Amino acid sequence: MLMADEQRRDVQGGLTDEEKRSNVIRLAFSGSAERFEEFCRTVRQDIPDGTAVVLRGSAVTGQRWKDGAPFDIDGPGTSDLDLTLVGDEAVALFKLTGFFVPGVHSRPVSEDDPDIAPSLIPLRETLMAMTGRPVNIQASRDVVIQFRGGLLDQPYLTLVETPRHE
Image 1 (cartoon, one colour):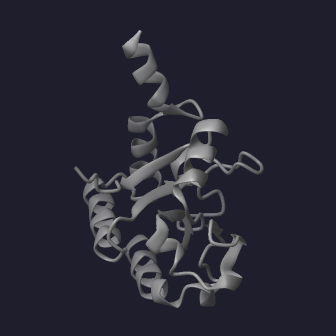
Image 2 (image 1 turned 90 degrees about the vertical axis):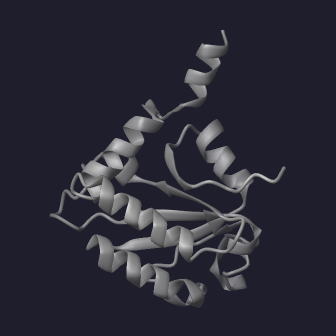
């Protein structure tokens, strides 16, 4: 029974953690686990302490949720990467005008909305240069990620875990 429970937790949207990771490496990093790990290291170095990071969207699933179109359908580098920083300090990086739900779930820093979290612009530019594709960065409280992943079954890949305090 425990094994079945563990297996269920490991699956979101029909994908295991390993399948999600494999999709991301294959689709967004041209099959290079080294480039993926470098991306994760860069993110880890530039985020506030105590912040987790997840990657959502078509890089994880292989297709857009709106219409089911494959990742990079419009050509190499055309699909974006959707990073979500999770935690209080990450949420605090966004201006009040930069939220879908104030203080809980931000809009993404993107080409269309770069001024809502100015301190994240250098990280975004670095990540875009590394990947050759748009990278959008938003912030949420943990409850939003739990709701989307657990209740709505929307897959995400954890890139940076929140440090556990003992």
